[in-house]
Length: 208
Image (tube, rainbow, N blue to C red):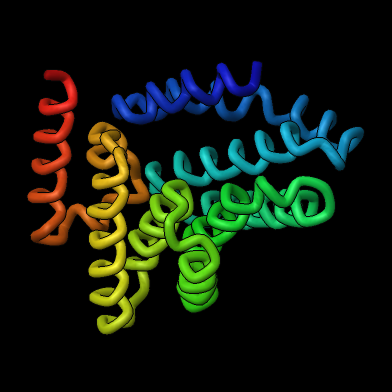
């Protein structure tokens, strides 16, 4: 049920109806935390909890509630790190999904050097994995929030390069690129509009 609430919340969020998204993220959280406490070894439960905190962090950030968003992002980071620990112990095949989530959570928590370092390691470990490539692009896009100009340019270049590669591998989610808050800073880059236009052209070709 939490998955359904999250999906509904995402729809409202992308439509800009932020306050309507909030209950779909917030309401299931107390129950989720209870279940997670009873089932600390459950991948499914721990993943949903981490994802819910990340969504709440995005929502608070969009509303300008920086302290609330930072707290939620730290809790999401803790959750994804727990998922990585579980995966290393029991389900290593899940690591290409969980480790990139840690890098993204580090960037959202403004731990930019750590996020960049983790992103580099991930690309070395899984150079051809489509999910890793996409999430590392997301990580680099979030790292544009750093105040270091050299790092900003480096991260923008890497994010755009990875998104181009993701598109070549079949990524077509233009709606996410245009509406998800992770890509907002990247949208200011001159090459981003051209990339979105290119992907839209790919979508049209795929439909023929």
